Length: 81
Image (tube, rainbow, N blue to C red):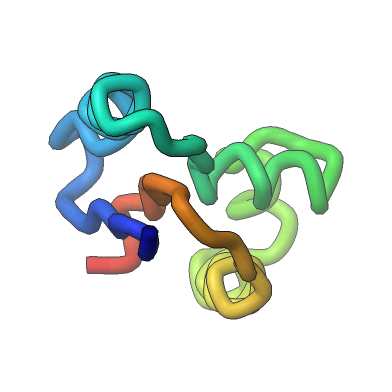
């Protein structure tokens, strides 16, 4: 099975819907915001403070490019819109 990628404005419910959708469809779930936080070792707001919005978006784009999975629901960050 292929992946499902959820894209939407911040606070739209991508992560909430993604978890439920993955469970119903028997798929895995990834939240790209959590991947960013894990990679950088800090919260998103702290990354933005340190790197600026443009730097954060560069990190987000790199993380999203490096997601190689199958059979997974992926919730992207709100700035992907």
